Amino acid sequence: MSPSTASVLVRSKLLLEPGDDLFMKSKTCRLDRFISQNSAFKLSDVRLLLAQKRILLDGQIAQSIQQKVTQFTQVILDDQCLQNNQPLYVLLNKPQGVVSATTDLKHKTVVDLLEHPKKDELHIVGRLDLNTTGLVLLSNDGAWSRKISLPETKLAKIYEVTLAKPLTPEYIQVFREGIYFAYENITTQPAHLEIISDYHARLSLVEGKYHQVKRMFGYFQNEVLALHRASVGPITLAGLELGQSRDLTTQEMAAIEAHCVV
Ligand code: URA
Image (cartoon, rainbow, N blue to C red; front, side, top):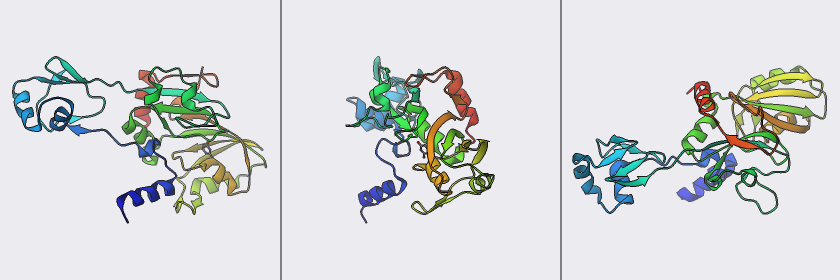
């Protein structure tokens, strides 16, 4: 099997598409390679540039050809800035009928809703279905997106769910033990269900499989009539109306970091 066939299979199995959070690659490069790709100097010139203290990485004199340059490292060579990208982290309150994609021929996309000047650089961190409302994060920082999406980080995503049939205490135990998804051949991670009333519940998940909430309630043949993502870790939608967005604050970024187990 060719690597490209394998990658298509893996992507279709996990239901990922280019642009999805887990598909994003970290853009990290060795300093000598970065300089040779972004200036007139050759790979073999970089040791001399270092000895002459002509390269600054994030304001510090570079020391080694092996230093890592990420997409957000500021790189200055002599007085020329070779790279100065800012990481972006955006919070959106998604309305119904808006698609979690960067482009779509039929529906308005979450990116269409943003007024952000650099919105075309952003990817979506954990999609919501067309009719799901609530919290969507967008970023240009693939490593961050991957980290907060990994089940291992145990970052809780809280969903408010309205159901067609009454809930019973059995749901709580079944969700805690995990449900087998034959398509992916996985058992869902332990999930916490809080029953609010006969038809309303709050579900906390640490992962985001395709249509996961609907499929979990589908185990009981109970249709999800309305779904809203209220929070991701410590981040809530407080003060954001449907359709509104804003940058995450430094405090929110630090709080997410503190909530990530790994
Ligand atoms: N689970 C679903 O079924 N749909 C969503 O939009 C999000 C989680």
